[in-house]
Length: 493
Image 1 (spheres, rainbow, N blue to C red):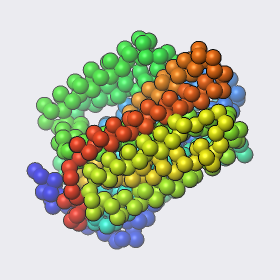
Image 2 (image 1 turned 30 degrees about the vertical axis):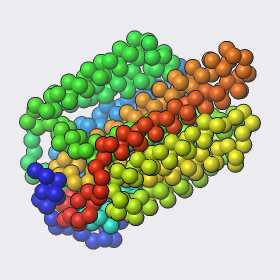
Image 3 (image 1 turned 60 degrees about the vertical axis):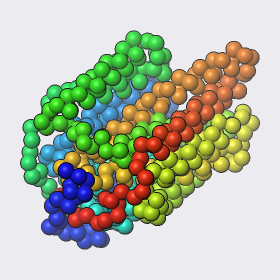
Image 4 (image 1 turned 90 degrees about the vertical axis):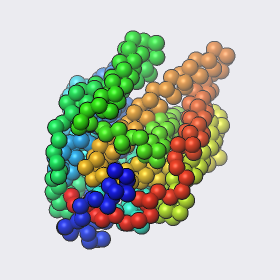
């Protein structure tokens, strides 16, 4: 079956979601839920020192408040996407939102480090249900190319800017209220998302309900768990520790076995047809590279601004706003103006090179660099490039997917984000640490050595973006895909 066939056979809408006004309200609800999931990857970062002082846990332990979320989120994404396909996008979305809220409330009330880690793991579990369902709902709600472009522009901007928003919100809540509000604030997002979802979304039922691929679940979940866990050990134990390379090796073996099994089983958890399409494969690669390189900006610039520029947490968050601005402009222009005219190949590739150029500017930072001359130009340029690429890749990554595969495709896209971010954080943290050691050995002071570490991480991140852009230029097809030209009937949800 071709992609055009799969579009034409999608069941027509029989509910109110054919109304334009309701579709945009659905987008607002989905966007609010997406903000909650994305910002929780960074909102805790700024709150960590306060939480550590309150709960009295060690420096070695604190990484698990970040890794615990990524671990459960990343390892369960594929099963979460299939659950949405099999049991309905609305119910999966609502369960994800409600569960995330409960886990957040437990985290806010945590009286021990163990309780807080358990809450973060719980957030990741329910995020693995929520995120694929949200993107799947967006895919099936907007089928008209013009509206679809606008919707994905907004969604892509939110996905790209969510990390920076998390830093800003974490700074405000920690400085003016308490670190626990970095958890409690999710209850506000969740309430809006749950009530809006109950009112606006319609129930969906699968036309056929195949057996769940239990072996696929075990292989995918085990592989993702081992991969993310191994990466989580790298910053503290280094790459050559058994806890790092052992789990990474096991993760690779399990994921290779998963891929082989998916090609053989009758009801695959992640149908190979989703990944073998050139445009979809190229978009997944670009999302992986984006997230691997993008979180380097948030991680190391936060340290540079707070320690070198002496910014307070709130000021550090505000300092990322220009990046959010250019990111949103890039995302909106990409999906509403450029993508329907020139297609993804040139847009994604050029966007990644622009983002790499912006991060390359950040690699020029010195100990005495200022925000206006040293930080701001890099933020503006990288934000534009990330916006052009992120929204376009997310649009193309799920365009033309059959309705019963939309959850699996959405989960795969989210998995690329999580694994990319985890690999990027681990790899570039290791690069930065090595550069710091080398600078100290050569006689540089502690402050200059730290900046040398940041510069090394930014340099390699920029190189990764350029390599990714070149690779995507060869993988993505030229021209505008048919599914982005011709309106498809709305899918009943």
